[in-house]
Image (cartoon, rainbow over all chains, first blue to last red; front, side, top):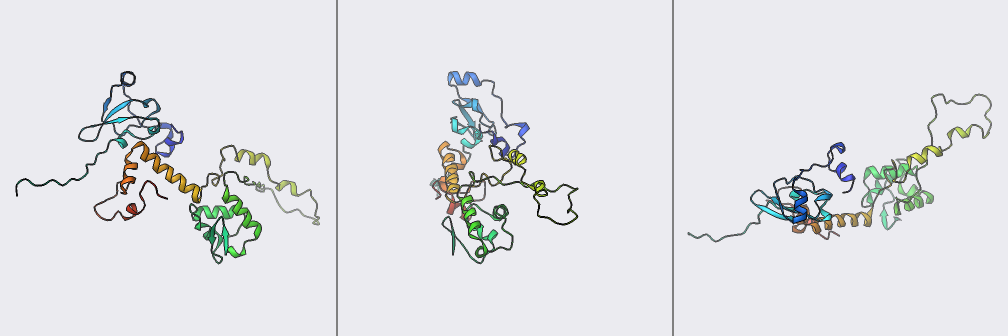
Length: 93
Length: 174
């Protein structure tokens, strides 16, 4: 991760990035099991690369495959919470 | 008609306002650039000497490789005019010569305290913005999506208007 990302985030540098410790990180990487999580504000750390996540979007869990470029972003950025409006015909007129 | 790096600077404007015609230079940066080349506040573009113009051009074409600022030490509290007959001797000048040892510490490899070292203007800045947007789009983040949709990125309302975003937000901005 870029060292200045922490300082640019508006968070104190001594705190470091905000992240949630996943206890099952190593197994997930080995067995390619997706980690189901609701921690949308967790920063993607360099050791998350290659892991599959199931990130909660408020309703269900969206699959997110972490790549190298995503490091420094938050998990929630990759699970959209908004549903596009689609017009449905009313049944009873 | 004064052109600097292809940008037309109005002749009758004060230099520190004329410099804001560059994309990426605002009032603050323009003032700093003026200070660097000892251009006073009331100096208009037409009053600039050719030397000053060339030095500005040289600086703006590549701020990162430009010569570091020469630091002149301040006079000490005990400094005072010398009494007696004024002779143009060279003995009194060494006290105010540029302090070479001090300037090296201020301009280290990363540019040190020099705020203009990482200045980006015009095409360079535009390219950086375009790269940032395409990076967001490539990794498929929310920001990238909103750019692709031409909608506000930072949670503004979209029920009405969102005019600026519709005008500007796209993947290929320039």
